[in-house]
Image (cartoon, rainbow, N blue to C red; front, side):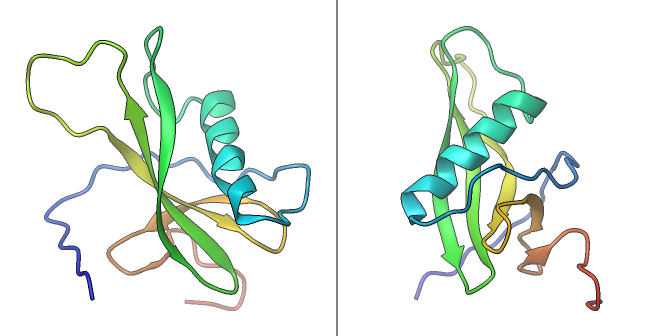
Length: 113
C-alpha cells in the first residue's frame, strides 16, 4: 500500500467544467482534463510546455489525477511541477477540483457534506 503525505498544497479554484462526450474508456479521461486545463488556463504554460496526468485513484464516481506540467525549458532551481489535483466525474465528464487531503471534491456535491 502506498501512502502519500501532503505537507502543504496550493490549489487553483477552477469550478466545474463539463466536457462534451461521455467517457467510455479510461484513456479518454486524462485528455478531457488536459483540454479543460488548456482552455481555462489552470496553470502558467510557456511555449513548448505541456500538461500531463498522473492517475491517483478511480472509484465508481470519479477518476482522480495529479495534473502536472512538463517544462520545455526546466528552470535551474528546484520546484514542483504539480498544477493541482482534479477529478473527472464519470457520470457527466465534469472536471472538478479535488481535495487530496480529504479525498473528495473541493465543493461538496448536492446531498453531501
